[in-house]
Image (cartoon, rainbow, N blue to C red):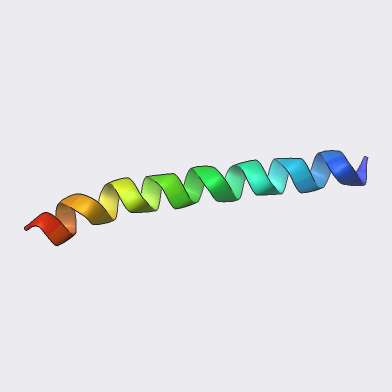
Amino acid sequence: MELISISRVFRISAVLFTLTMLLATPALAH
């Protein structure tokens, strides 16, 4: 079960990182 929790946290972290990059890119473009 611990592996599932780690995988879930890693996936959420990856999604948050991707969203941050997508939001930061246009901000830097301006």
